[in-house]
Length: 259
Image (cartoon, rainbow, N blue to C red; front, side, top):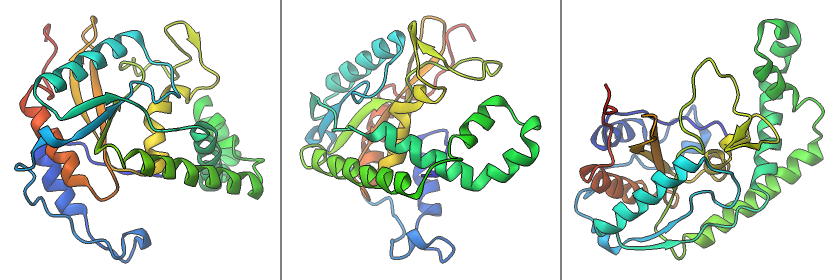
């Protein structure tokens, strides 16, 4: 559930970082038996052969109207440059939200419950809320959430029997001021809790499939919006190959027009 990724200036830099970070390490049991990734033929695979599915919201999350508009433009752009067969379809994410929130709450309380109880007054209300959500969780609730997680992951496996890439948004809202602690509504719709705006993002953390985000477009107020590409486990090469092609066709960082 704790996913550490890289932030890079370009797909080329991401390739170098992934090659440096990949491979087995005794301090990480989950990495044992995993080969060191090599960027073989990243530039030579034909994107025109890819089967691409897309969903702006994965059927789990409200999405800001401007983010939806820019995502639609991104899909049209992908189609225009010849990115394979593009179909609107989402994997079955039923149960993903409750599963993630339960598992996340349990992990946070296990890791930070003592800190919260001893120094809660020095922490932000958001941190305290997130940690204390896991205080009264039972083992049975955690196991049920893990069971649902396995089911959602299997639904993703089935989805990728028909698709090579899933495209969605990187975030459900544009960037907001760092003085704003929480996102409480999207387009006037109140959210049940302060992490609901992260749904479309945290589903990928729940299933653990490789994902990559690329910038594409700006809101009318000049705020950047990105798309998220997802591939099958251990198919980082496919992911990076498509990202590299998209980067060459405008999916890359640019400064807003007024800067």
